[in-house]
Length: 254
Length: 327
Image (cartoon, rainbow over all chains, first blue to last red):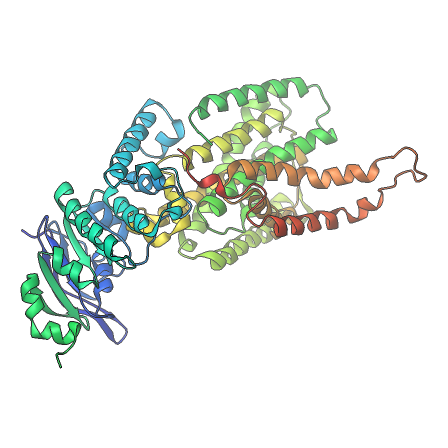
């Protein structure tokens, strides 16, 4: 059974159909790439899945439940977490607190706990602190825990964003152009990291990316969007040779 | 700032306030400096509670004086029904009246917050400004509370314990709220609403919570104000008063609780200190009061100092960094 299933998902902004009748299914622990030229509707597809926009028509199923029209925070609580094309960390919070803020999703106690500050509260906060540090350490961000998130290097900020998304304990992780602005070495690192996340956390990953080498290198399956329409889907080798994809995305052969 | 022993500290401060209150109970309650002290406590409550909305959560409310007015009038209406009672009974009844004022203000906060918190920045500021003005105009036209002639409050029930004890409680509650995993959500909303939503934070709920909690404490402060000035006029809760609280928050440093407390103290004392300066006699000088000109220009000096401070320290006197890297 697929974890995420888009059925004829469509969104129109006025006269423009940004994503048109998109069918896409992602199985648990699958690593899928979504590619396409600029303006093809990749990020819009992400925004549909994460609830930033409700679909104009069509259905989005996650874990067997419809999530079309749900609020973003609701969908995150259900198990879809994302990163952003342009990094969106919480700027006035430390590295530690950026991750900790997400743990409110897993809090047992409510506000009264925080106000009373009894034994239960301190135990829960200590447990959260341990789990935050575990996550940070896995991604080698532990030593930076008390630094402001914005003081990290670009690559570290991208990684912190991924850690923050993982703190939501998602079943599906959406990465929006994680390699944007990275150099060759950092991209190699990122490739390893994405595979590692999938294997370590046993989650599905949907990746939007421009960097063909990266996408072809790690994705098990690739869907190609052009002008909001899915023009091809399949294994990387198949996509690489698909004439429609070559025409739309990699450029027409002379 | 660590919040580890906050509850113990709060208890300690409350005991201190009770002792201070007992020590000052024989003094004339109308003594000038005692009233300045009460103002300090009241302004701390107002500034710290507004800091939750404007500082931590990053919304822009210009209606804090409106919430204060709701609390002040509510508490005063209740206590005016009470005849002369012993100090003990007064100290038992007073918190009830304050609580009622706080709850009324919180309700007002909820009513304003729910429909308007979809708005951001300037737009929200204008709506809250409008709300504050509505409160003022409604009070001006309510004959039951004297309309624009003002409303007399019978009991002088505010004392050192309530003024500073409740200031301490306010600092504790808002500190405890913000310094928890739950409370990091307020700052997440402040930093990036889109990212906060994507990280599972219900931004509307957080914003409304900030508004309701902020309004609640503004209402409490209003009650304390009513029972120390003994006379309420609708114009006293106007737009300029709201601005004064916003200035405290900005001057202290947005989201920096310690800074905002200091700014509230400073901005309460500054105009009073200038008043004092105007009356001072310098031995050896011919004039009786050589600084008398300060009396006329005191508010101008106050404004100029604010301008200078903002030019020199746009991030606030004590910086907005209080947000970062706290456990």
